[in-house]
Image (cartoon, rainbow, N blue to C red; front, side, top):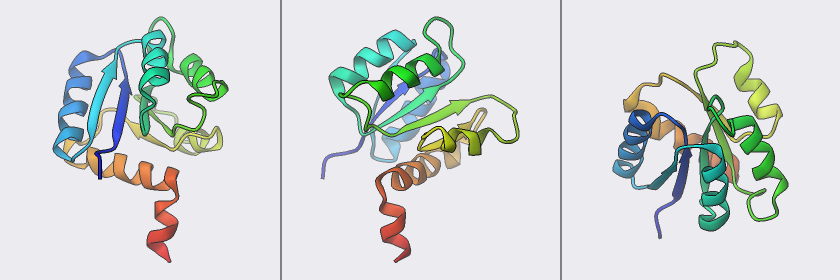
Length: 133
């Protein structure tokens, strides 16, 4: 089976390097875009299995990218996980209500990052239901 492909859209290059390294160690194929506009273009071209999207970026912020991804026929079906440093207590539930496949709060514990991505991916693809049955 080919590795699952994850697009990381985040302007923090240090954090992107960490996330990429952690995902690759977990068997994912990870690649990145460092702003919203290029992230949208990469998503359309590459059609990853999952997108990790920083919501707080300059130029082409995450919320605008989210709307573009979900309104495009080429990318609307790709699960998106919000990644943000927001401290709003109800944000995770709000993200799911908006249709996000999950939410990962920054800063995160590196030793649990890939597990969190796995859980979001499984929930988005229905694998969690299959596991519970």
